[in-house]
Length: 106
Image (tube, rainbow, N blue to C red; front, side, top):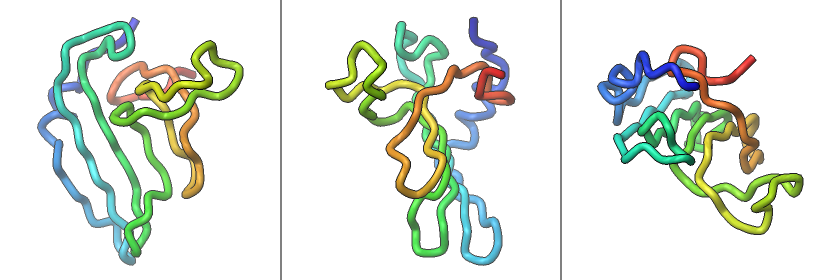
């Protein structure tokens, strides 16, 4: 079950770019979609920390398709699901979205 508190805050911050100093910046995008099995919270989002030359170095999103790890049933397809990018070369690993305030299940 997902905690939907904070989703409006995320939508309100959509399009924000926040300076982090030394050339690093955060970009926040979010938009409402029809809730579905893949997006039960009804929000597509992309939250990313970028380095001074623009490359994403850390992120959480469900805004684009990502190839699931081989252990997943649909490993040959590109599916949009909640996933995180842990470093600059990470293509994304799934996580369980809990809420805007605590996106990753513990």
